[in-house]
Image (cartoon, rainbow, N blue to C red; front, top):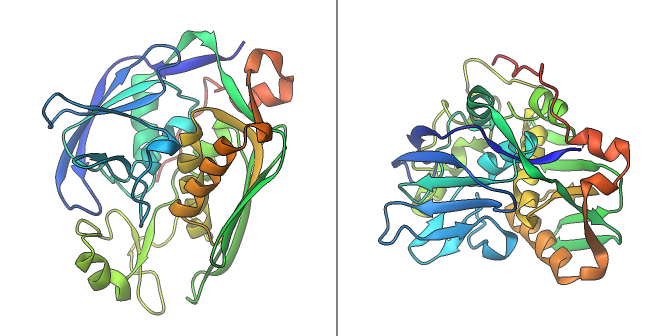
Length: 306
């Protein structure tokens, strides 16, 4: 049996928001079966709660945000990706600001933290959302599809007119161990030429080479260079996993994306949910061994050093 997971104990982390530039403290607390991931804005009157779900997504420009009005939380995708990567289904995320701290721009800091405090199996088995019929969404020249598969597979293509990136494609077959080794260290990235425009929109106020891969017209500006030759497309997969986790369940399906972003990912989630014939939700206990193996977390898995 592979059970739903939470964290073994409460913990906290402090950092800055990459878009707001503001310091924020985030506390993670264990939660019971079928709670899901719930954000609590502790700085607002009444400490309102927001369920991490695709139907609660608002802004999707350069990040994924949930909630509305004052009660919003931005840039949730890296944290959600780390939860999914470790098979964590139920956590209360208490946060005293409107944006999840960016840490180093990937999800590896969250993975380190979660493995350090430990995970806890709950009493109910995991539930998987199993894709039965293909679904496709398009937005301009960007698109994403999901089709039946026994495992979660993400096949991503990105295209940027930059000599370091150009066209990159990576197909990732999910399991917890491969997420840790192949995806979680991939950082977000941005272009120096876009910084002024983003700041005028209220974005990227906290961005630096400490929390993103920066590129000028010709090269990577970070002194340490890249963590993977194709770090850019691997980060796209990290984002996709975080965004698609907003369906509320772990998945059995193949996702293919082309030049996609947070908006397209949310369109895909919403279209799946609007078409109940396209999926079913089943206990992992009823599924084949190869499906279960994807979400088993080997006790000896180590987080690779940066």
